[in-house]
Length: 105
Image (cartoon, rainbow, N blue to C red; front, side, top):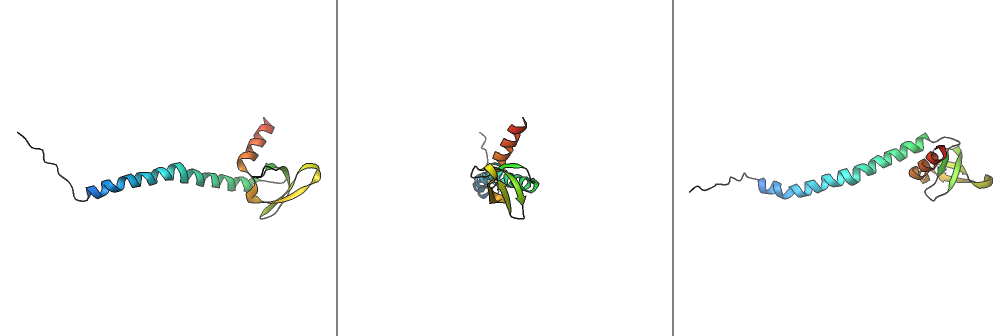
C-alpha cells in the first residue's frame, strides 16, 4: 500500500486566503474603475474640442448652440435668442454626440 504524502509549502495557506480578495480587486478595476476613468477622459477631450457654433445638450436636457466660450463656461443660445451661461462640466457627452450623429445621418 502506498501512502500519499502531501507537501505543503510554508505560506501557501496565507496566499490562498488572499487570492479571492486579489481577484475581487482585479475584477473591480477592469469592470468599474477603468471604464469610469476612460469615460471621464473622453468627456474632458470632448469639452476641449467644442467650438463656437456647435450644438450641444446639457446634463439638464437643455438644447442649444454655443455662442461664446471662456475658460470655465459656455454661453449657449436656446430658443428665440435667449442665452444661458453654463459651466463646461454641464455639457453631456453622450446626449450631444447622439444628437449630432442623428442630425448628420
